[in-house]
Length: 489
Image 1 (tube, rainbow, N blue to C red):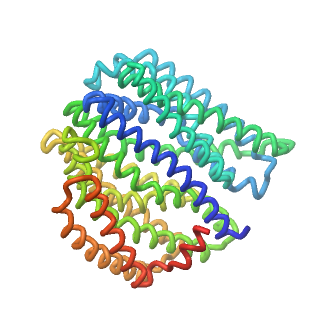
Image 2: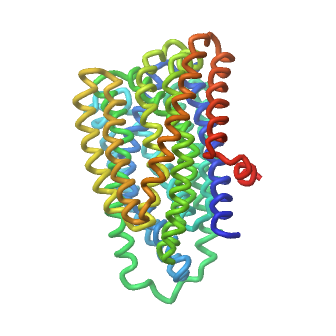
Image 3: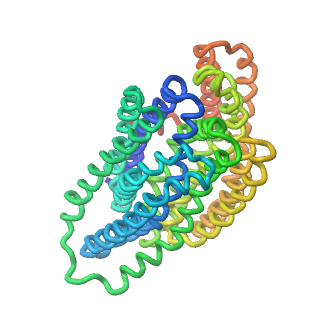
């Protein structure tokens, strides 16, 4: 199987898994928000998860992505070092998780009170289990990425999504409320972690014969490379979660529900871009090691063009239909989320580029540059959130996210350009053409949206926009139907 076929195969596997994961997440979001929880309960659940996601940073410290980078390198150059890399990482993670879990168990009530949500204390107490299972579930996914066996990574992700849906709904129906939904998350991630670590041990660790000795300095380099990754990962999580925590701190759980729901919808829309970025990134490390930068440049430019072709129109369409979509699907209780989703539509394009680019920089050895950019923009995001949320409400959090992420994306693209010497003129010309297609599509959707009065008509309006986009994309030459049939086949 050549490199392009391998990428397409990995992309298909990852996309199917993300489809299962995102569809199950969307169903869970819909059932909880529409039928099982009120906005206060929905907001309390995801506020607690936001806090725990930040705490989880200390249970990993960038080790997962660091070992993935070295697994990608050493499985080709010195396979005997692979068992040592895995043992070092898992040992370090066990120490970190034990420490973080112990501290959380001791201080969960104090943390809840300090953040202005004393009712969230039971979530944080149960969060000890959440940290353990979530940490090992995500570790196994990233490790499989390092081995470039994305099918297994996809399987673990799909299991976690389906498990969360099944057990969260079951526990809420059993009368356990929002806390029951949280335990559903724990069970889903626990099953995924057991499967992931089991495959990692029996399918990979035991398959490699350990070298006579650990390469001198390798463990030190593994830990050193985790430092910029920790900074980047911390900034990334803070960038994504601190706004949720601050909305709860400055406003109320219902406002958290409005903001979280809008962000979850953007996550669902972003699934294909995340799949593509996760799939192609390990190849950049291999190509740089083999001095094949021209091939890396071609793959990245093609991927970026396809991402922009899909997500610029998607973002504009999402902003146009946000009102009828939220009120018809989730009910009038979530009408306040409409302006939030409209602002975050801009974030969709930015995050699509980030999903394609960020992991690639790690495999190109530019994690430090990305860490500096992410750290600076995360701090700016924190400052803007503190300034805007108390003054203009939950929409302020969305504005802060879009503003700071724009800077981060610009820096990421510049760093990729310094590594791969992108054809900026061609990319700019293609982006202009995509914006023209999007403009025509937007006018079409705006003309039919006022007639939307039910879900069937809403689906019809979206279909009109998609057909307009598809026809123009083919006529402009940006989409080749034959290539699409080849990839699907």
